[in-house]
Image (cartoon, rainbow, N blue to C red):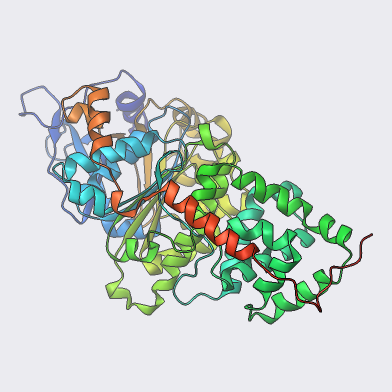
Length: 499
């Protein structure tokens, strides 16, 4: 008698087979059963099994309830194991179901494919892709969204905003972080927030005592005012020493004109709370090949603001909070210390996370433990020996406690074919092995040449309603900077002594 484990090995680790969406049952052939998922279901992929009555082999399309996603979805697998195409299949279903979602993509390829699916699924509607989609692409040389991370979310205090953003900076600059740097940065951010300024004004605020004096006149936060009273009493060379590290890092971040222009408008051109509440679509293309380390910091700042927007939904009854799905590829690059809080609390505010990355070693042990315990849906594609040792116990401890035992199962996890994974459902219980849905690139669905389709996507101007001309943003920034620097020194004010 063939064991359950041997059947799994034969179906998924043995010879590859072509999985067709549907065909007529014929004697002696495997049976494939499919019905389109309902809007309240999410299709995951194909699973093999046995018909209870006939004993014949059956391949069925498997899925989960949309409500199960409220407990978050964790996806892990090595490069080229099929994670990205799996994400695309989930995203395309969200588009067809009219659901609101966001994608934080550190490479850019996923975003480009999603743009194609949006264009096709909307029936090539310019009104839809220009008004329903917010596209954040720092590499666009002519236009950009305006994004001010210092802008308050509804109900937030300036100190709360500063704390959120300080965490993001700490995540990226952890190797040179210290208490002095944290206090200086946090109080500087409070001052800028209360003056409706941006990160672009951080340099003149710290380096020009007259600008600092002017800005602090409008600050109500007592702790911030007291901090800079002490700071202003220091000798100039001591002030320079204190601010050097912060200035070097912020200046390096804003050295890229594309990023500086995106971040230098006091008013953002999009509202993240509105994106969630109205079921819009947020695409964040962080082309790490061009942005380098700046991609991680920008992603962390955006994630902090998304969390704040979600948590601001306390002013809505839970029944009126619309679900919003946030896909984060290589999420470990953006996860700050408060990420565990986000995992634990986001579901209450109908923010569901779909987290993907390559291996467990990328996660600090506390975060890894939080994810494995809190994510209700989990997918394991091909993984390393070290990860297989851990995830074998997470997924099928009860099923494979008897021979052939752990070693053979660990080997299975290491040798899974592309597009084959284990799905663990902690809500309903159980683990199933699936082959993910075949997901053709959008140009193939459109039956056009890839370059021709790319040109069509460029012409439809996705996200146009939220974009601004860079030259206009630059002119506004220069005018604001000139006004900020036009300060007549009061007779009673003197610079700190040199030396």
